[in-house]
Structures are given as structure tokens and as C-alpha cells.
Image (cartoon, rainbow, N blue to C red; front, side, top):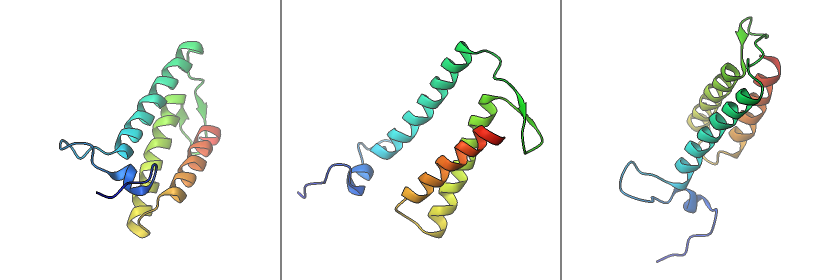
Length: 107
């Protein structure tokens, strides 16, 4: 049996069971989404209201709206990247982070 290097592409994509093809990458993805929603809940509890604002998309958005738009846009960034270029996905991750920063700042 071949030894898999820690944090290598094989390590991230190695199946962890037989149900739903769980990998470390899918677990990390869902953990991030849960953490983002939990952080937004804590932020809303500390500062209620979400400070709606009128951004460049000409709609009123709250923090939750901006989180949703940034996550949805990030999903499309990754899908398009995978369609056009395939793996590795470090570049679309950087693009998605820049997109999220843009959404939270200007939308």
C-alpha cells in the first residue's frame, strides 16, 4: 500500500467511507459553510439589524444577503474554473476570496 502524503491532493480526495463519497475536502467545505453561518449569527446577536445598505447592484442588502451572494458567486467561480481548467483549485479560491471581499465592501 502506497503512503499518502499529508495534505496532498490524494489525501484531500481519499474516500473516507462508502456513503455519499465523503472526502476531507467535502467535510472542509461543509464545515466552512457552517462556520460562516455561525459567525454571522454571532455577529447578528452582537450587533442586531445587519445594517442594510444600498450597494452597486441597486438593491438593499444585509450582512446575510451579502454572505449568500458571496457564497453563490464563489460556487459559480469554482464551477466555471473546473469546467475551463480543471484542478488544482487554488486560483479560484483566491478569486472567490477577492469576490467575497468585494461583495461585503461594495454590494
